[in-house]
Image 1: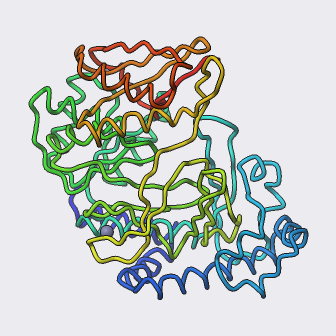
Image 2: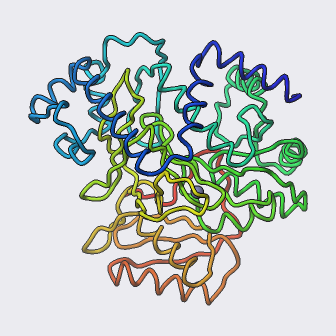
Length: 428
Ligand SMILES: [Zn+2]
């Protein structure tokens, strides 16, 4: 689609759905280069506002604050949030109607999340919440010279029902994007042809990687893009080599969830910057991330346990922005690996393969499968390689000792899924 038309369509959509979008965007542009001190001040003010609103307008929080002896008028620093209990997804579902606030003057829209595991959650999102979220994304896209209405390739699962497919095609057209409907060579060729006049690609990082690999194997590239964005999944180190070759860039990380909004976005210098104007992040005592969504007025999300293991960082970024950084996002804690005598978090595999990349310069695509206690099969994509085998075993030994017996199997390539990838599967 021609870019003026694409922009007009985007603006028309925004006018009806997100009337405050451009205003919020201008606001976030005005805070982009503030000092850390100024940003901290904004974050604290926004936190107080949300807490006060929740206390007055949400029956659930009114009670929770009362029970905790928590008084928003005495709230003076973020660490005071510690007085409040954590919130989990089960509570968002069970207490759904009591968490919702009354007294919202804005338009609200229903949002639904299914998630790969666990029950569905539905809640109403107020216009400012949605708009601030989109505005934060627009600000981050600017770092790459990309506008949301630019033509783009989109790698995401979709419903195969034909009516749904027709709907998807119309929505994709309006949003100036196109997607891959299967991984056959002819579809990939078509998709790549369209990528030639696109400015970015986004989707599940494992899918972006698969497409990049095909581009390289079929010799269709390089197809230089302004931005290669991975969402919603761990980004393995092995992915970057293929995307750099195919699209001229590493997969950058966009981190967020429906409940939390956009939490962080990676800048061209590799800094994963937290949207400090819109969220508060805390590292929970037993690991895992707690998020407070400062825009969530219709359905306040306060100290919500997202389930991701995330490491925050005190470093500063070379780009000059003072928004705090996330050092590492290693995904959900996930199911446990059952050893003969102990249990290990599935996330351990993340560290095993991270170490191999960082220390040994070995980049591997993997999948671990457990069917029996004390035994795990690890599939590695690629040809048999004794050096890899030795290094993988050394790393596994370091974390699992003798408690788990591993069989490592090299496979030519993984079957491609048009959905979020599971790095560890267990039938126990
Ligand atoms: Zn940066």
